Length: 283
Image (tube, rainbow, N blue to C red; front, side, top):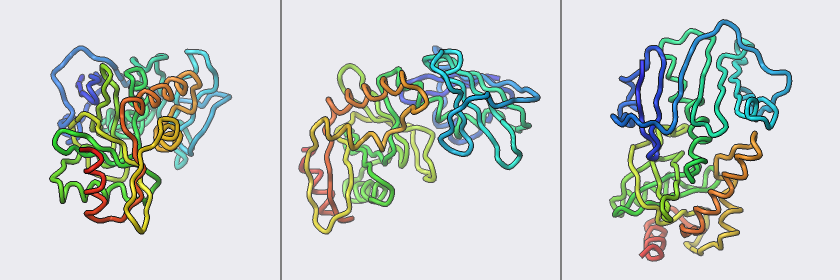
């Protein structure tokens, strides 16, 4: 069974048994376009094993060590509750073709695309489309996109909520928006991945600004230099730490994004004055 979705103008073809087309996220991003920029296929297997050498950034995601194409993009999803590998992901060097093998029974196998496997695969594939996925809350106001970013607890969702309240802005994604540079301009896109938030849309807009937040007793804004913007945005970006070549590509994309997108540091209170201050800069 096949299904096709479109995220950040990248058409993704999914092939698996029992694809959950009734899932809301699948419906929101479904497309009739057939020329895919990425394909993900699923199959079943009885036993999957971890390689002898692997890199682990958390308890579940294990990356095969090595720089060769046949090993660099191999991911193993480990379930600590049952003590075994439940999914194995083999991807081409550019992540255009992704093959997922599972050894657990799932009523809807492609649901993994809606969660961790799809998110990781997309974050790597967008690197080859001059893009990145960033941790932030994205809105569109009068067709201008704004991304609020910063460490947890700095008020990303609060500021985007204030813009929706006072400026009638529309939400794009409240946790993991995507950015692409296309023909010299940057754009922000909604994705189906939204972390703990349940707020996402299939919208896009020209990216007018990235706003890094810092809580403060007074509202103060300053535009950052490109070097400072890159330095501050790196921890906020989803980067491919397992792969040196793709990491270089991701950093080049980030540099390209900040070269065409104003990046501000907004030290602020959660009030309307902060909204108006940023609005003046954008106008």
